[in-house]
Length: 125
Image (cartoon, rainbow, N blue to C red):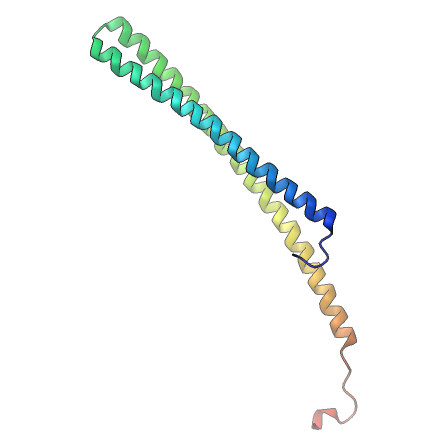
């Protein structure tokens, strides 16, 4: 715990963290689902190639390419979104550390103000 970090601030901090974790999970699910669709399309292409029908192969190739394009677009969007989330987290951390630094500096100033001042001749002891 950071001294001076108010309960309301702490609560907001943890709520943001929960939202980030939830967002990561959601984007991972989107990407995984797109990857599965692409894998299924590749499987259908393989079956069409074994079947040997040029029409089925062309159709399966088109579906496979479309599924890959979808997976690629979602993956790029997920990466961009994750970078944005991580960047926002770094900014929050910077603010938190700044708040901690100000709190520590204020504490040090109080300690220094309360420290007994040396009297005359105390340097000889």
